[in-house]
Image (cartoon, rainbow, N blue to C red):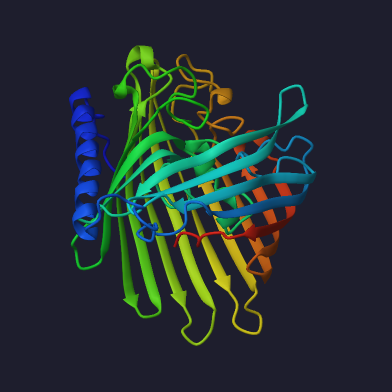
Length: 417
């Protein structure tokens, strides 16, 4: 479909990968010292340090919604931050901290509070460190290293936090492939800005394959060695077609072991992402088109599960004096599974392990119009309607209306392009 699948990295490849990390990381110290003519970072008055590590940027973001489902069993909203039931929903409260550590590193962290409903119907509030990582700031040769716990760079939206979404909920294909909270785990990433005449970046990373945020890989179990890691290759390209038109295209490949580790089974995921934006130079108005297509091959002892999906969305910011209004439309589609007959085929994890947060892996589509009003850059109101048609509903459909409210206080960094 989207591309061919290749064999995952060997242990010798991982050894070379780590040696490369250490070599590049050590070079930043030598390079930085030769540039600054300083015996140590922060010497003297500390004026050589970029930013103030004693006074980091801190912000708090609250995201809430009031939803009405037409079905008493609204299990089709599969994203971890999606509204889950009729009534008021706390989608998340996020505390963000960030600062330059010294001339060589920047530190960022995101702490999230989110309610979760257990199988017995009770609600438990979970507080977790969603991201916490260091990023290098002075590596030579257009290189950058990120290390810690962070969202995988696969695709366009997986690494975006809910307050940066253009819609109330997450696209279906991302929930199915990467789980409700997205693909994120402890790991390390190297990115290289190539010398091509346009912005072209190559990204590679390795991360743990275990835990509830490693859907499609190993939601349960422990890491045995570095060969159990998830490996990413990504090629990202940004081009200014005209002064008012820009284009971003990415190609992505993921590979790693899955829950059938005893059989040496693995998962391969390939994807492509597209983003085109026109900004009216005479006003604040813009029109943006975004799409992703993802294909997965999941090896099991009884065969290979092959499924895929995509979404496409349009987002328009109106012209002055209505520039605080945004409208959008998204279409989601995911395929049915291709493995035996029942979803409980031997060797295939059930939905509770994170392989798919849908009630099963069947064909499904969803249409979502949305309108958003920004009273200011620190608050927003969003109204969205979802018409959802899963095959598992046997002729019925899921319809949801959600009114979302968000506020942000403190110093919050700019959102990703």
